[in-house]
Image 1 (cartoon, rainbow, N blue to C red):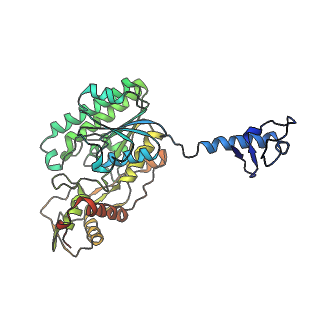
Image 2 (spheres, rainbow, N blue to C red; image 1 turned 90 degrees about the vertical axis):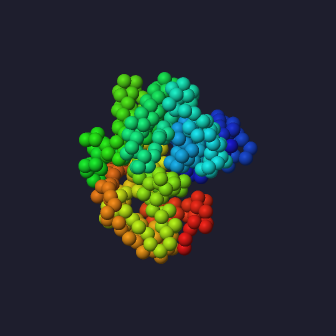
Image 3 (tube, one colour; image 1 turned 135 degrees about the horizontal axis):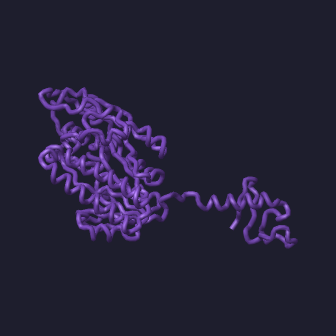
Length: 383
């Protein structure tokens, strides 16, 4: 096996006999006498460094992803597999991953109820990293009527999973929080320290408190047990595989669906002047992986983008990308929500080198194309 040094000399390893007087092995390009000790050991170091090219923190890591069949989870699983990890997906619903294109990947799938502590302990055994994305999530209309259910269901899962990871001696844990921890009156752009000021927004009150509890548990477990835990707060994630169901779809998918199904007139709630920032799913996955690798300090990081867009501009952009010709009507009798929502991501940039790469127009086009290609029946699209 040849060894290459920076001077492009080649030294067969089988001929190593530093200045022993022995003849070089057959096929060597230069006699060993031409190499100084410094050059020889430089070549050795270069060889060892070359052997590690392509390896990463994730190579051969045994990683458990709860909620790995879901929107963000399925993209995360793909990213982990590409990084060389051995991935086990644990979800409450039975599937081999075909619904989100994971069936062809070398991934284990397990159907489990994460409210059962024994199930949580089983899936954590032998894991190097646990990335806990599983959560009970519903639309705003459901959330406002079921704060107790949303709090209890999510709090139990969070408590059981982190405790199971502790008992199993898992090396690192990802706690996925939410922008719902922030109060309505938070600063914009919103820094992480505003996450425990006041009360979570009323529409997601129970869910927001469950995620605040998860963050507190993470801090306590790091303090007492020395666990390595990363905390991320995803910001309005969108992209292929996101939820398009009318009753639960978030802003981006809801507006895409309405635009594609509209005939002549599109009605938008509010005046459209409120602004939001939306994070493309691949950027969110990158932030999650970087947080686990570089900042497992039980200290929250906003993973989002500083790119803001007004809702009226978002709708107009979707209309243009969809090739539709629609009259847009804003129904000002309907609620508009907060005037602005945008994260301060300077902390994530500084501590883990996070930098979102996908601009809104590019991400929207990918999401629309995915929806048209596989999610929407052609007859439902009105051109």
